[in-house]
Length: 93
Image (cartoon, rainbow, N blue to C red; front, side):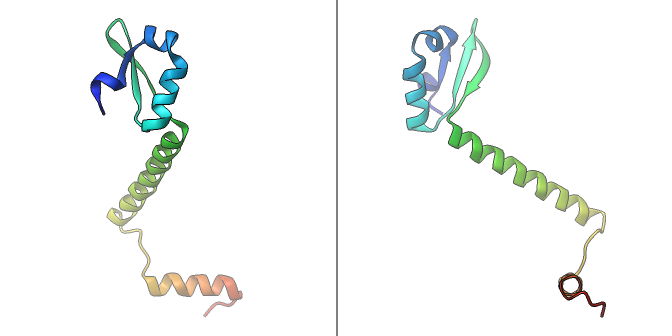
């Protein structure tokens, strides 16, 4: 983040919105919008937002997996593939 470029007051947003959108889409850096000197919002390009959301979802999945490991809810690879094969073939071995 480049502080001088990436923190803007709400008045800047109001007067130069198109310019700000161009900056965000070119740099892919989020911009913090302040009001009365306090941070109030963050604006970022759609592609970066989507990547961030996907990353967060992946982290949630990994966290669930970690909890399962800690609680001993695991299956060996051999058993997993056996179960998959049984489901696919409709056979119980």
